[in-house]
Length: 164
Image (cartoon, rainbow, N blue to C red; front, side):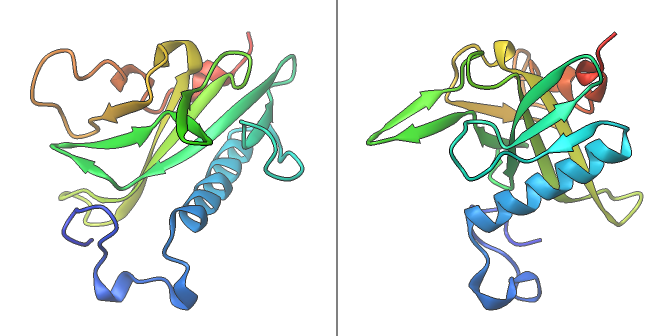
């Protein structure tokens, strides 16, 4: 991995064809989410166009969930900063329960010392837990002070998508 600064990557990891941008990374995150959700038994649908606030619809048998998918490699202290908002002309707006049900965030390309390999860490966060924030910080490897771990209970929380 690169130096950890936003937008920097090591030379051997550069995407061919200039596809090293946030739109491309977001599309890859959406595909990863759809594959991982399908492997867990969910029905998966992609809305037509980019006209909705959600990226994916999950069929949990008795319920459909609207999911906004984000990826982060923006390091913030020992964690990762994630935009929990959408943009309109000159403004950032928080997601609301009328727009999405969950924010799914993938931290990709992390390396564990014990395994020495890449792995994906998913956070499945209900929109109500965002509390109108525009940015959240995730700490999959531990945080510096109490209170910063508020979203850690949603790490790997795929069970929240299961309707009982």
